[in-house]
Image (cartoon, rainbow over all chains, first blue to last red):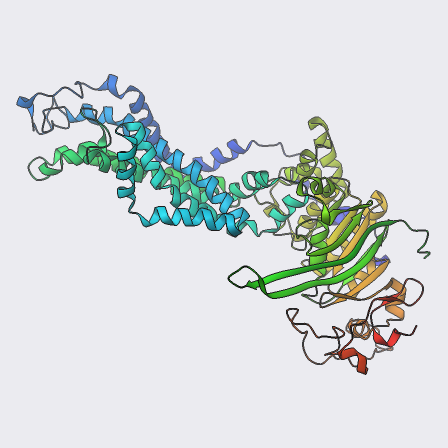
Length: 305
Length: 328
């Protein structure tokens, strides 16, 4: 016993590296995250594209060379040329202008629907996963009931009940994907909550809600972020499906998915009516996915180089 | 060691914790695991009470009940004249700053997304013990107390070794200035050279802060360094409680004797007689009827299979649960 009782204990415990005796300055978490994100080229590319899209969403209408909602049947189906870069559609509207104008609708619907289902799904999933038992049983069985109905059918039913309009479409599309988020969050929480640091958080007097939001959720955020970025693309496509069925965006308003749906019959005769809105959706989805991937790595301090 | 003069800090009375493993369709328990079955003991102020026993005997469960990670099935935990086991959630939480826990696994007990400075500051913030501008000094002081350099406070747990992480865990427990610290096998996950350092650190902190420890370990040798009194558990029951010297020099319960004989010795001149127990530990789902140890005991009498021995005082604060001491 006495053998170990030396006064040098403190110096022994800390490997004294003379190089970093200076107190390390506290770095803000956002800055650290940003530094990590910067190293990921694909994520930066995704972010640049998202910024461009956001710019188009705000100024798209001003940049459009033609009125996106003006139709002139005599100008229908003009292939891409100098006047109409992306050609014109079946009603003679300029596709380039419509694609620009549709950016704000598609992005808004995608982000809003995902935000809505993410928030509700995360709350429900956290409660179910953290408290377990009967609470878990009731919440998750309700989610199972929602999942047992095909999502587009459920969305149509909701639209029928709520009425037409973009805001209603967001609620319908958001609601049908709540169960997915709830399940992902619940399973992540189940795996994290058994960790000793969650027990430690309880021992030092944290309330249940603080344990969930401060100690558990930041540790499961990566799976949620990845799912949410994919969810934005799903939401954009769901909006298109509803638009195709005449329930989403109301004509003559431009929206990528809606344009895709309405041009479906001309896929062989005038492929450019589909290709350009389709490319825009693909680029948007890809950008969100790349950015989400990079964000996941940046949010995980262990990945830091 | 005059027991009468000492002030009781915490008393555990008839504490039980049953885990329901299976229930029938009406939700009534069918298979019950008796992790802790009717345990009573006292912890005196300023002492280190060691709790030993093999894996699965319920010692960690007792520790977790003291810090409210498990709710006792029945029984009392009396601290400061209040029965903590009967308090509603909100009032129970107020006592968390008096009783703290040091975890076994330093790799799992620190949130990987928080810097160690945040981890140590959090208990102070939550319990509103200090104004925000004084917290940093306090964290630096605590880091200094546990032997970590305060320039490391903005690092994340994965940047530290096991021993350093355990020091962070100790600092977190100290942050709320607790009266009692439950050390749940704090060194069993560390390698031997670090074990000694951490044990010595705990010993020094005890004197410095006037702490009381409930020290849980699965071997008597670790407890020997730090404890004043030792309780020996087997299958959810306390078999023997005694002062350190009595336990080590004059173990009364056959189980304690067997446990002591298992400590490896470096003294080849006085080779101890090794008691080899036969059989395995019975399952706590269906423990033996009489004495818990009767199925493996080498010194069994006829009562042992049927009558459960009580924990009795055999003089000088030495308690033992064994029929051989019934008449004393």
